[in-house]
Image (spheres, rainbow, N blue to C red):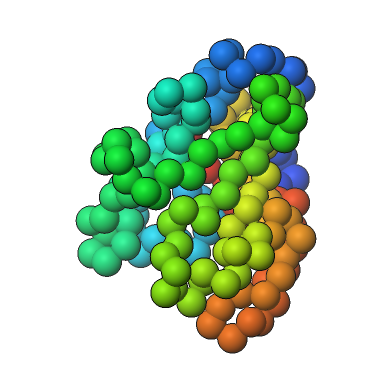
Length: 168
């Protein structure tokens, strides 16, 4: 299925639940369907785990040789620790929450300046595509607004529907 078809058939969750029960909405092992990250790594996976009351994102099968891992699932003291947090404190609402991948960017990285300005901030929406395929829909960079990206500051388009993670 194409990204356009996934976007057109996506159905978001429509319930509001307290933080304690939202773990069942978000946690799991996912396949990143449409982002440019790790396109050559066919066995790359994303993980959402609950630890210390936070929803933490990790990944495996990424990077050079598709053998890198990042996140607290693999190293409990890793500085790379994107978390999923509610828009409104304490309430994960409508299966729609926020995350930032700024912790993945080192100061000397070309992406650092852009990340500081919000390039790696996203809104996530839990839901389904097709008949019951559990997914997380991601908006685009700069929390769906689009904006300049390295290496040359070219403008990435904004989109409310830019990628999906499919429950594995």
